[in-house]
Length: 255
Image (cartoon, rainbow, N blue to C red; front, side):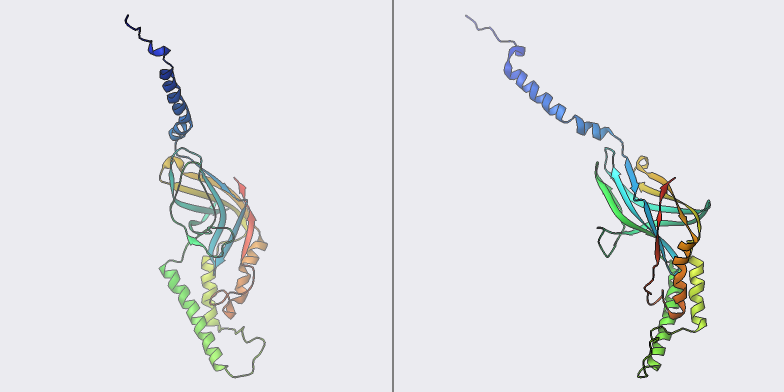
């Protein structure tokens, strides 16, 4: 007698294969859904901004938190800040350096970086414009002239009785005036209401971010930042740095 073949749908091994296949398929649904999501970043800022300057040349420090909340790898190519005072453009800053860890003493150069989905980049970042060739040449001459003058002073007073003010040699006016002029040409942190646009530029236009914030600089803040001028005649702020406050921390509010 010929054996009757069992229908495939009654074969338990067939259904075991189907169940295994469905299990694998269902396990891949979240990754598939993620892959279908477009590139998207999320930007958060700590609620403070620190502003300072180097002989008038302004710089700004922010704590940035950038999250990849999309489904694709995104490369951040640039982060920059645009500053306006009372609706008038003041200065644009690119991100130049950052702290790898909050307690680090030294910064590293900012370069492009990639974020995988769900990955985060959170660092204290410094925004500033390095001196161009002309400004660097001018600054080096100012500092060099003052330092040379101080060395001559130290050489001519060597062996003489020390005084309590020997480290505060006052330079001649013709060497000090260029310091004031350089400072006034570059200093921009004057009292007023400021708007800050922060822009994150990526390799995917849809992932680019622009957010707007506001902060206020009061006259007391400007006085703190310009107190360095009292030390210019002694060379302070050029070839040596006086132990005074050279930055202020301000509240940020999202506009």
